[in-house]
Image 1 (spheres, rainbow, N blue to C red):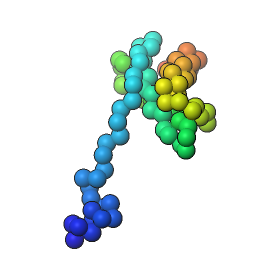
Image 2: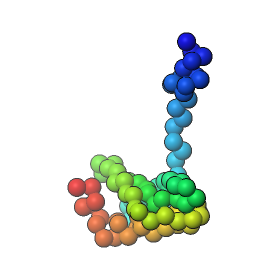
Image 3: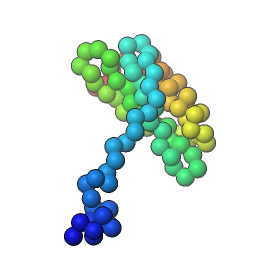
Length: 93
């Protein structure tokens, strides 16, 4: 039976944790870049976390797609900073 589970991907050991992306601190928050490959491009998405206080998270995904992985990460950090500057703690409500 375990052979069939492995064959069809039903083994619990086959589920690998998703890798953490690069992080950057900004104005009391941490921005984690988590670009997702879609075709030949990377979709812009990331996580903003409070460094102090309640330790809340704000996940953001944009329709923008960037061709290069490094360029996508730079764009995610710029977008994260923009969200922090414009919304501050209101992003968690």
